[in-house]
Image 1 (cartoon, helix red, strand yellow):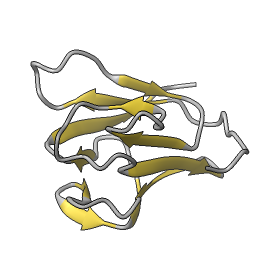
Image 2: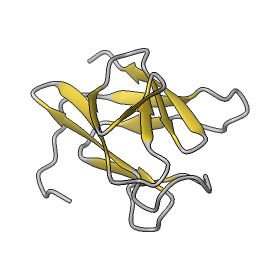
Image 3: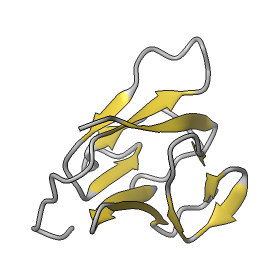
Image 4: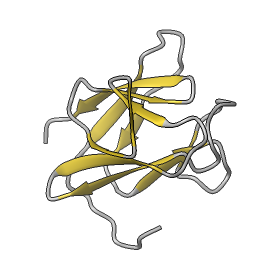
Length: 105
């Protein structure tokens, strides 16, 4: 994982499932999502890889990169290796689906 940390964009990953408990609030990057103990945000989903995907921010643009996960990373239901995230996009990893929301500064 890179040592540089960017503080530029605050965002939330809001669970698309109304029964899910809480959103993920992000304002430091890079951030790794997965089910393993070594990730920044651990998500209980048996279809997630231990280190599933990484969100990063550079020059005010937030991107998501699949980390060679077994079941893939999807933005708006398209499987991606690398993608730019926009507010309102759907991010799906395993069975877990989030709606992307950027917060006003």
